[in-house]
Image (cartoon, rainbow, N blue to C red):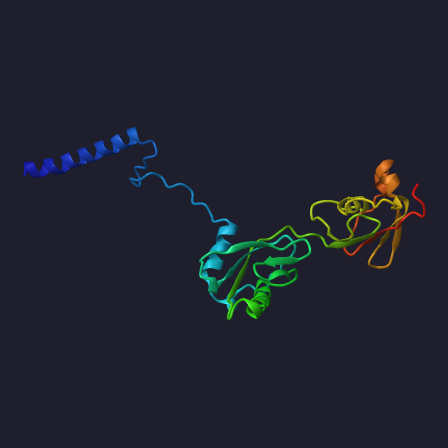
Length: 234
């Protein structure tokens, strides 16, 4: 009877000593769970999650057909038949095109991943694949612009521009983004035409060189800016 009493008491003493030893020599010791406290789990990044999705499926039928792609969006791209177990990260450029291996530039802006995947599939099967299963998923979405404006005339880089989402975009900023004025540009008679037909003349010489920034009109979607040429180089 006495021996039966001392054995459990001895075991309790040994257990308490072990806990005390662990606390002394291991500050991270958690005596509630008898293991070190786990660190906070990190949520996967969008890139990793998307890459995993692209690698996990071999079916084009499950691709996203809702979200429309825009400039500066990134997508993960894979052709199942390549069997290299790797995906590529591709960017939709400023012109709304995606540069696809073998195919080259493909219009992507305004298309869903599913629509674009079937377009690429068709192009690949014309020359390079007997059968191509194209897997495409959004990798990273760019900040959306407010819309587009158009600059033409005597500037160094004519064409459409995206209105940045986080700033007041004015006529002078659009000219700067277009590379600046051409050699014979008439800075005093820059013409702004709104979608509703309203027209304004902006004297950018006064705005830029004389500091009259209040005359620098803020742009809205579908504005057209035309920079005429001077009759003589003055």
